[in-house]
Length: 285
Ligand SMILES: [Fe+2]
Ligand SMILES: [Fe+2]
Image (cartoon, rainbow, N blue to C red; front, side, top):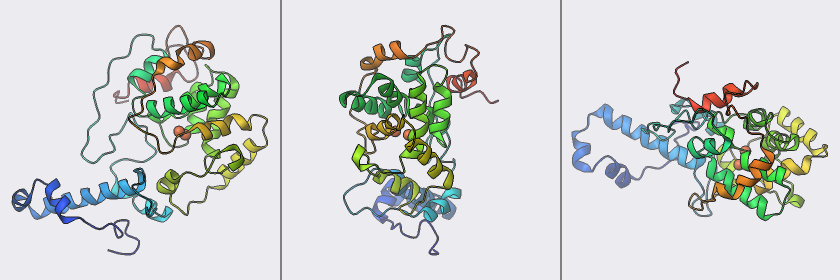
């Protein structure tokens, strides 16, 4: 394997690999191609684990940006695709989604569609509530990553657009600018560069000029504190077992979220199609 090969630093635990395939006897019945295929899948999973899984222990070696780029053609999906649209684990399938009602509410989207990022957002909002920040910013924390069900790349901008017709201006502003501010520590505000980004973007990642310019704009804005709070209350090594109930935020949603009576997706707003896309992600066109 060449130096640039993303697999070159991954060692294979033979025993784990063979037991994953069903044991020595099962491996003996496999064709050469099937074994090669299985090995490739195993290495892929290891590579993703290295790139995206939470750190195990303190001696984690983070990938470089070049290694992450070289891994692009090893995946069956693009990392910027929305969580609703792909099952990222090798061999996994997407699940059957519950039907949405005729006039879906934000709470219904939380319950039936935001099932991959919902818990992360609820935990972030809970942290913001505990920190005693204003309700419009708690709402920003509650919503800040939910658009990742639709699309992950540029999620600050997509998320702000998705929510702009329904929330206070400072809320969508904070959602938009949290994306760029994540790359820039503000230790006085309590924000440190997260290990998660060393893992996801590479330890030597340098944000591109437009991200730097967006950060500079946000820094000079009177609402900087709002977007910064989203990054401070964000959780970068969150606990999937610590479930925060949406009940804690239902009153706050009622106070600050303008729920359209026709339902999200059916109110003729400029972003209604985005809500319908999440309601019906299995539509082929
Ligand atoms: Fe985010
Ligand atoms: Fe987040």
